[in-house]
Length: 234
Image 1 (cartoon, helix red, strand yellow):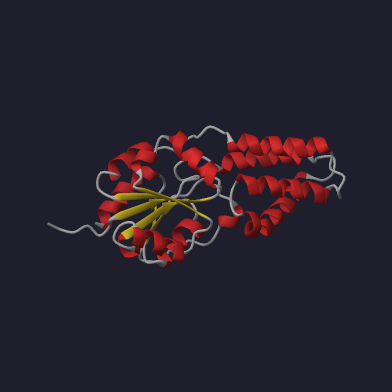
Image 2: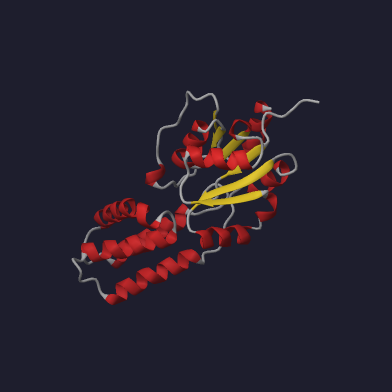
């Protein structure tokens, strides 16, 4: 009886299992419309991105930090004269994001169902705890996962810790996700396989170059191709 190379497969959540970034983009469009009397759309978007970068260390990833960054940007762009009605509208859009229905991506259900019979599946996601728990519950995918890890950030240390706790260690694990910066590069650095599943919309702060020369790097078009990659690895 041969021993499988892989024992554990980690999955990112947002824009890997379900849609996420598209709702942020729509919210940002609404935000720029709210401030259209004060500045042009591209300028507002750039100032918002700068605020998000600054605030990651304070608020972390997720909708609440995004909402606070929109409020901060509105105050800056209007030089402190932003109407209370605009602040109220920003808060409403943040609440809308927190209650948006979950839309799973193609091939997710059948892929997780097939893999869960042979491997330990771990959901590894960053962001707001309550929001990620809500989306997982609404997705109906929770039963496929042997463990769920909602983390403040993703690094090689994060993956070593999780894959050493669940399964046979990072060398016998794989991380699957749409972010090269958060899902793939640090997982490979930890000694795991990294399978990149590009999404048409990925937050600009998650962009890095593909580690094409890394022996444990793989790239697929959609999750329906993951099974063939796993079979090839063994």
